[in-house]
Length: 306
Ligand SMILES: C[S@@+](CC[C@H](N)C(=O)[O-])C[C@H]1O[C@@H](n2cnc3c(N)ncnc32)[C@H](O)[C@@H]1O
Image 1 (cartoon, rainbow, N blue to C red):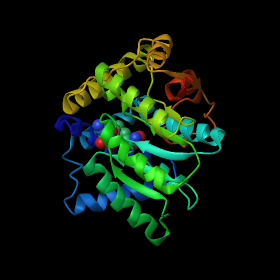
Image 2: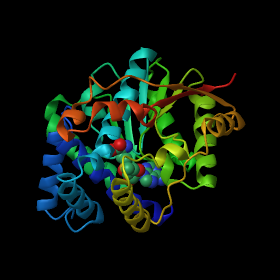
Image 3: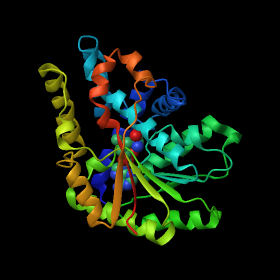
């Protein structure tokens, strides 16, 4: 695995911190508290990390420009879009990729549901520790943690072994949130082809759910020039530190073409979540502005073409 992908990992801490500071998502507070204990033990050095500094800067600036807090609103929105789509699928087992410190497994996993959450080794080890500390003996035997890099098909196949052993008949829902845009065009193709191959080999009725397919035009959406300028600094710092440019699609047509070329078809699902998003109250962003940005937390539900 390329060492360079590990530079993306600190962004998972930033997402966790945003969920704790600006949402009421279940378990957001507990995960963050567990992370803080790990910082105290020296296992994670958040404050000295660039995401810690960005977070502090954003918090301070948001007192004057609350609209810069659009990011946590999008994070909460994409989380609910994924969960709403899962509800519509009804029957599913979950394989979550690049799950970071997401609250999903804690919220959704029950004794009857098969759930693999995965990330790069360092992050998934910390996540397992955190989930076990929170759930204690209540952790489901169907809740698995895996060091998995979806850019490597052999690594992805490890998840298939666990899925087949579990004898669950429920099709897989493969999820990724906040990951795809960090990959370059070639890596995005490898990722797509690996998922298509994986569905073909192990769960042809399964789905790939992702809110990460965003048209370029929307990635630049802004409220006013000052917010735009601040967002640009955040983006550039993040790109410099992770060593990655964000790679978005030109438009919806390019998304469909990309999927089609990989033997997949995707449907965009959008949800009116304005009433549901706790981050809107917490950030004090005008709900009408959020409505205009609904596409930013829309989700693609993707299946094999035939
Ligand atoms: C922005 S975080 C998103 C985490 C989580 N999905 C969330 O919404 O909070 C990006 C995640 O991608 C993970 N990551 C980066 N490269 C990866 C790879 N090749 N395979 C698996 N995970 C990877 C990072 O470790 C990090 O946890």
